[in-house]
Image 1: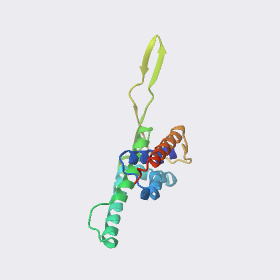
Image 2: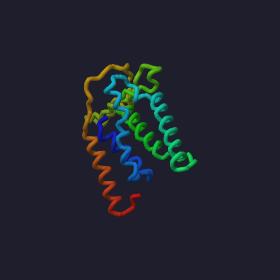
Image 3: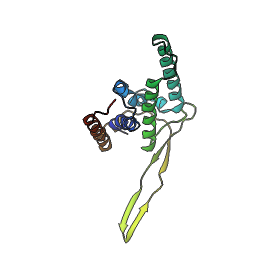
Image 4: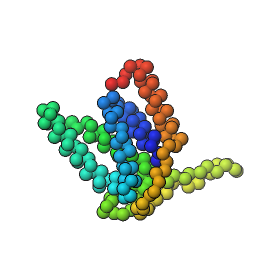
Length: 175
């Protein structure tokens, strides 16, 4: 999945559930956080096991800082939740784009994803081929390139988000 899609799909999601706020803009780089593992050569950051640890550290840190500096004992760790949405959306998008997402790495060395290859055959009527997605399984391997920087879907995601923001701004409903 390309960079633009990883950035704008979670923003569209937050907009749709009315949780997109200006103060979350500085958290946008977390949408690309899992791809940092491409530079170290292991799929650490595409693992739910590792990301669960990251979430625990984030929640703990935000909770500690809220109690210490804001004197706030509530469990409202909104920034950690937004970061979690950003990171998990990355894994979900990669999974549905063929992966691989290494769900239980380093305990299990298998990455999974779905490939969609449905075709409509037109001739003496209509026929759909390969309707069900294919499950793709793979083992980790070191990559020396980062492909999919920009795609048409990413550009459309960006344009959709910008149109949504323009519409929202025009009617002054943004938080």
